[in-house]
Image (cartoon, rainbow, N blue to C red; front, top):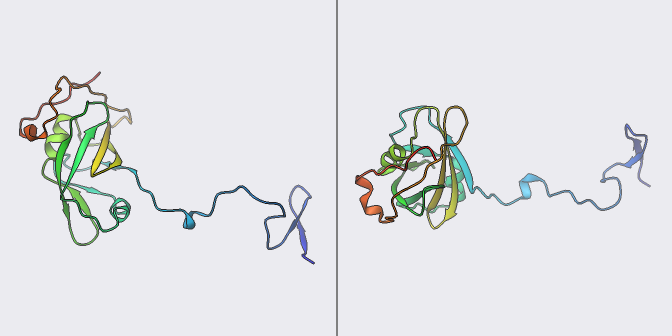
Length: 160
């Protein structure tokens, strides 16, 4: 027979169990699958140099090392910005060539929070928040989706 202890409410609870009855609680975090679809970086150094992405996101890619990713501003139309990716061999992934153009066009500066959402197929949707924690909104008057023109930085127009 299981022994019981008193809870602060005075109700008995069986030791070694959940107090009888079935529970609808989710499984403990260690048994949940690792899904890292969204993350952010804080720009606390030169906003135009390569940016490291979180190691957990790299782990989520499970050994895949894309040569490029495609950034899409969340509110700037269908344009994709091609950004080369570097891996350092120690589990770190960096946004490199192409990041500078994206950062200039979207007003990424010191103190910004940059939110990324992984959409699959090496596409990341990006939202930029300024130092006051408010989102920067943009719109694009450029219907051209040809990312070959990234050298001619055509900024989204801020603010909406």
